[in-house]
Image (cartoon, rainbow, N blue to C red; front, top):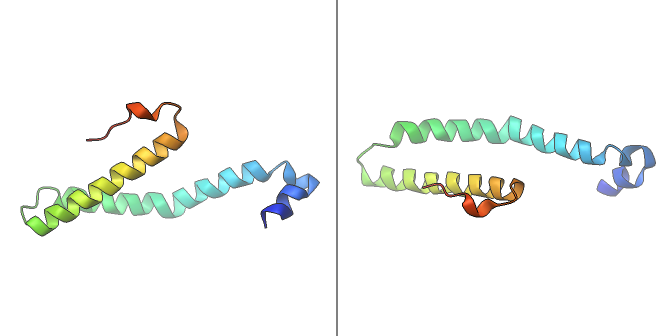
Length: 85
């Protein structure tokens, strides 16, 4: 499918733009609402004293940290300064 657009002289000019737009749509439609939903649940359960829930919150926060670091590391030239604790 990619070669169909990269190899076509007219579409070749728009391939990079279309790719960026498709990635933005993915984030806007699927990832951001999912992150918001998870963030709300984490905020509601953050101070819950039950050990099982605290363990799940810690696991989810680690996933959030890894995702942010992966996104920043991919886009920023010096990701060694990024640390979320």
